Structures are given as structure tokens and as C-alpha cells.
Image 1 (cartoon, rainbow, N blue to C red):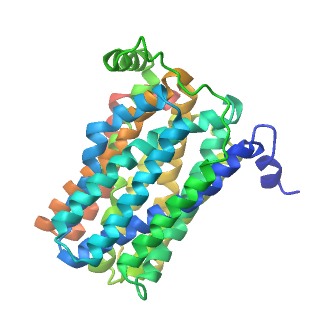
Image 2 (image 1 turned 90 degrees about the vertical axis):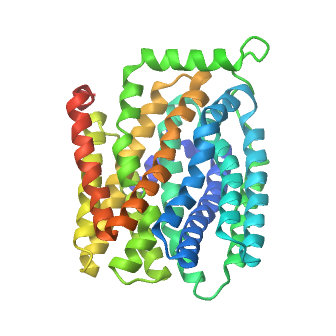
Length: 408
């Protein structure tokens, strides 16, 4: 038996949990269609408008619900049954995706499309922190790092397959039909959740005693006492604002810098996913001893490789190799950050702390908006270089201001 297979089914593997296996299987389908959706929407809006600003506005529509309701989603995760909240969220995502299919079929204005994206993003805002907190309901604490790594692996497998599949299907299948196909991925997740049994209590907050204000006060006091959590959140600024918007801006880079169509755009996203999968496998086989150093070096590498990808866009093979490196370093940073954070948080506060940490997702559309404006005024090349080297030098600045992470 190979080493990977032995580790996969060891005593500390989350795969020993039947409920987790159901959850992981459903997650693969819903995350694959999520990445298809991201590819389809970004490409569609850019083709409709030809404007990088319009592309940035689309992704800013994903930002608004996160900023307004992100913390409240964490409170829901600690107050109510997480499985029930997830099922409601997936039903909302499925229905709103079907609405998007109709709007695209009717060829409505891009403004109405933006409004529909905001509505669907509300359900996604709830789903993400609840889903991450739900992992601790499926496995015990000793298997939690395995569960996080395996979920990340599935997400990156989906990230590899989804964009390439969407780009290929866009050549022959209409966008409304693709949106209906995407809605089916959510339906599969609902069927996967139905038989799942959890081992944790349905509610972790005394709903008769605690108010929303008290919930948040307790959360912020806990984070204030845990300096490592605050430091991890601060170090998310550079990669999330400057780096991770590359997935949003790739239609622009693929077409204007590299002369690619939707299939080439999907290929670039898939190549970055291969790098991310390699990073996840590395972490699943051997957790780094000095996680602070891994966080810092991977964030620096992410920015450097992204900048070089933009700089050497004329070489097809080199671009693919650099995109592979971008995927590897970005996921190495992201997964290490999530594992470190989850292991620091108590069960009773898990949903609320994770909801605050996961609000770093809002940095991505915010960064996309900034990059889109820069691309509109100064050109695509300048915007891309600003992304990569902005991530690199901002991370260096944060290391100078918070040097204690290096020794973590």
C-alpha cells in the first residue's frame, strides 16, 4: 500500500468518518459547478461590456453581502444547527442560479445581472463560514487538520476541472443551459447532506441568555486575547487584495496579453489548480513545523510568481509554468493559514471567529475593483504588475511590522 493511501486511512484521517465522506463527495460537485459559475460569469460580463471596470463591479457585487452579513453568518453557525443552515443556503443558491439562467437567456441589462449576483452572494456568504465550522461537527479535533486539508484538496480538484470544463462547454453550449447545469451541482450537495449524522450539539450558544451584541463582544474579546489569530488576519491583506483577484482578472489577461479565448482562460485556471493540488498534497503528507515561516514565504512567492507571469506573458510555456507556481504558493499560504486558525479556535466560538477570518474573501472583489480601475486607466500590463509586486512588497512591509510571525 502506498504512503498516500496509508495516510489517507490512518487513525487521524477524516476519511474514517462516513459522514465526512458523504460531505466530501457532495462538496466536489458543488465546488466544481462553483468554479464553472465563476468562469462563466466573468467571461460573459467581459464579452458583454469589454470593460475591465464592469468585470470588477461584477465581483464587487460578491463583496457587499460579505461585508454586511459575514459576521452574522458566524453567529448563525454557533446558534443553530449547522446542517440545517447549510441545506437552506444551498436551496437559496440553487434557486438564485436558476434565476441567473433566465436573466442571461432574456439578455437583460448587466445591471440586473449585478443585482441577481448580489442576491445569490447573500446565500454564499452564509454558506462559507457555516461549511467550514461544520467540519468540526463531522470529525473530532484530532482529525480536523485532515478534514481541512482534504476539503481544500477537493476544492482545488474542482478548481482544476470546473474552469476548463466551463471554457470547453462555452464553445458549444449556451450560457443559460450552463447555468442550469451549475444549479444541478447544488442539488447533488443537498442529497449528500441529507443522510449525514453529526456528533456535536446543534447549538453552542445559550439563545435565551446571549444577545447578538454579547455574541460579538465575546468574540472580539477572545480574538484580542489571541495575538496569533489577529496576526494571521493581518497577513491576509496582501495576498487577498493584491494576489487572489488574479482569478477574476484572468479573462482580461488571457485575451489582451496572451490572445487566448475562453478555452485558454479555463486552461490557465486549471493549471493554477494543479499547483494548488500539489501544495495541498504536500501539506496533507507533512504539516510544516514552522508555520509562520511557511505563511510568509508562500505569500512572498505568490506575489513574485504572479508578477513574473504578467511580465513574461509572451512565452506560452513559461506562462504555464509560472501559473503553476502561482497556484502552488497561493494554496500553500491559504491552507496553512486555515489549519493554524482552526486549531486555535474553541468549538463554542468557531463559527463566529471563522466568519471574521473568512471575511478576507471580501478583499478579493475589493482588489478586483481596484485592479479593474487601474487596468482601465493605465492598461492591463500595469494592472497585472501592480497585483504581483504589490502583494510581494506589502507582505514585506507586514513582516517588518509584525516580525513575531516568523518564529511561530
